Length: 175
Image (cartoon, rainbow, N blue to C red; front, side):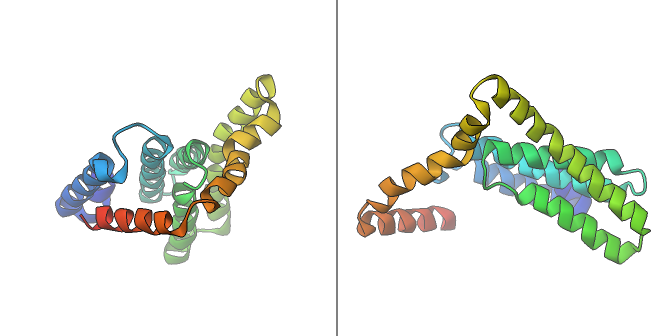
């Protein structure tokens, strides 16, 4: 967080990013008492963003940074399936940077290809692992299927308890 803040906002950005990240990942009111998928995945999202920024800064030699950014973004999705932010940020940054600096179409395509290649490595690793253990169906269930199966329990709760939970989350966010 400090490095990304430094690249985007100098010393002021370093301090702001580091303290904000520390506060969000250390506040027990936000459920950070134990390590869960979010506390594993969020640093990977941040790493994907940082590596993408490094890739843009090191143009035209930033292709390895884009590969690494895609890999970190894909790993974040494997840790927590709704954490696609890092991968989306990387793709959006490459597209936006291409519009502002006017690199050649081939350079933009290479950068996007590197993001895709990097993202494919963790995904392929997970598929190979699943083929030797639970199988692709087991992997799919552990990533997404259990959410569908458990939605019945969530929707079976009273709306009062859901509203109370929402209020508690809003209060914790404000604090």
